[in-house]
Image (tube, rainbow, N blue to C red; front, side, top):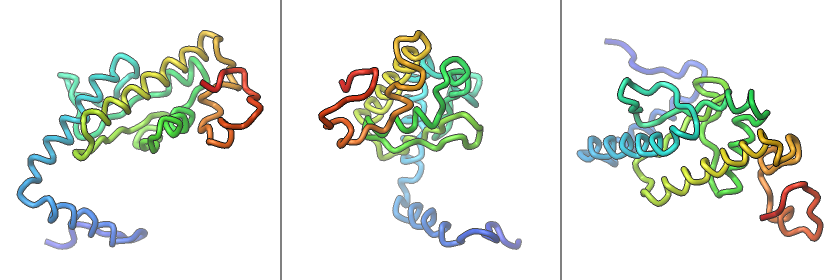
Length: 170
């Protein structure tokens, strides 16, 4: 049959991570896969009224991951996927995958290990961030000096005696 995978210009050891994960899950692989798909679809449904989704099927369903399109927001407000990703740090989240496989997007992959509370917390953060984008669009927030462009806000910045921004610390 020949090779089924190769790593001509990369590390083949990455394949061992997938192999060991599958071995650890064992006979529960089907269940774990279903949970990952359920989590992604739950989040996509919560976020679809706030961000355009790419690549859903005719029923609006996604696979184990989904992509939100930031390009229309950037065109209307100047806020990029990078700005949103940095702002998520202020909410305690690592950034989702940026601009892959589509430039100007965020790919969200909640996995099977996240509980509903954490999924909701992430969705709530993205919904709040969208409201901040709308404040930039409406002129309530300055297009340059706003919580999105200045994110992340480190503890040192937030706790400093002087606050030199046009928006409040809160």
